[in-house]
Length: 81
Image (tube, rainbow, N blue to C red; front, side, top):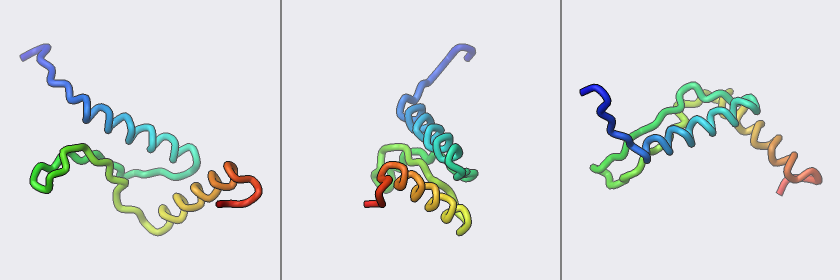
Protein backbone atom coordinates (compact mmCIF):
# COMPACT_ATOMS: atom_id res chain seq x y z
CA UNK A 1 0.00 0.00 0.00
CA UNK A 2 2.79 2.39 -0.86
CA UNK A 3 1.78 6.03 -0.97
CA UNK A 4 -1.41 5.46 1.02
CA UNK A 5 -1.90 8.10 3.70
CA UNK A 6 -4.50 8.74 6.37
CA UNK A 7 -3.86 12.24 7.66
CA UNK A 8 -5.23 13.10 11.07
CA UNK A 9 -5.31 16.89 11.24
CA UNK A 10 -6.49 16.95 14.86
CA UNK A 11 -3.57 14.77 15.94
CA UNK A 12 -1.11 16.87 13.94
CA UNK A 13 -2.48 20.03 15.57
CA UNK A 14 -2.19 18.50 19.05
CA UNK A 15 1.36 17.30 18.33
CA UNK A 16 2.31 20.77 17.14
CA UNK A 17 0.87 22.38 20.27
CA UNK A 18 2.72 19.89 22.49
CA UNK A 19 6.00 20.50 20.66
CA UNK A 20 5.58 24.28 21.01
CA UNK A 21 4.89 24.00 24.75
CA UNK A 22 7.84 21.65 25.23
CA UNK A 23 10.20 23.98 23.35
CA UNK A 24 9.02 27.15 25.12
CA UNK A 25 9.28 25.58 28.55
CA UNK A 26 12.73 24.18 27.76
CA UNK A 27 13.90 27.72 26.95
CA UNK A 28 13.04 28.83 30.48
CA UNK A 29 14.60 25.78 32.10
CA UNK A 30 11.64 23.42 32.41
CA UNK A 31 12.12 20.11 30.61
CA UNK A 32 9.11 17.82 30.38
CA UNK A 33 10.52 14.40 29.57
CA UNK A 34 7.22 12.56 29.98
CA UNK A 35 4.98 14.80 27.86
CA UNK A 36 2.70 12.67 25.73
CA UNK A 37 -0.30 12.83 23.47
CA UNK A 38 -3.39 10.81 24.29
CA UNK A 39 -5.97 9.99 21.67
CA UNK A 40 -9.68 10.63 21.94
CA UNK A 41 -11.53 8.36 24.36
CA UNK A 42 -15.01 7.68 23.15
CA UNK A 43 -15.87 5.67 26.29
CA UNK A 44 -15.76 8.77 28.47
CA UNK A 45 -17.02 11.03 25.69
CA UNK A 46 -14.10 13.33 25.05
CA UNK A 47 -13.51 13.33 21.35
CA UNK A 48 -10.31 15.32 21.26
CA UNK A 49 -6.62 14.65 21.76
CA UNK A 50 -5.19 15.50 25.17
CA UNK A 51 -1.64 16.57 25.98
CA UNK A 52 -0.41 15.01 29.22
CA UNK A 53 2.49 16.73 30.95
CA UNK A 54 3.49 13.43 32.49
CA UNK A 55 4.50 12.52 36.00
CA UNK A 56 6.37 15.41 37.51
CA UNK A 57 8.79 15.04 40.41
CA UNK A 58 8.62 17.75 43.08
CA UNK A 59 11.82 19.38 41.78
CA UNK A 60 10.33 19.55 38.28
CA UNK A 61 7.18 21.18 39.67
CA UNK A 62 9.32 23.69 41.55
CA UNK A 63 11.30 24.49 38.37
CA UNK A 64 8.04 24.93 36.48
CA UNK A 65 6.68 27.22 39.20
CA UNK A 66 9.88 29.29 39.29
CA UNK A 67 9.80 29.72 35.51
CA UNK A 68 6.20 30.94 35.70
CA UNK A 69 7.13 33.37 38.49
CA UNK A 70 9.97 34.79 36.40
CA UNK A 71 7.64 35.24 33.44
CA UNK A 72 5.11 37.00 35.65
CA UNK A 73 7.81 39.33 36.99
CA UNK A 74 8.87 40.23 33.46
CA UNK A 75 5.30 40.99 32.41
CA UNK A 76 4.56 42.95 35.64
CA UNK A 77 7.89 44.61 36.58
CA UNK A 78 6.43 46.50 39.56
CA UNK A 79 5.10 43.35 41.18
CA UNK A 80 2.92 40.40 40.34
CA UNK A 81 -0.80 40.57 39.98
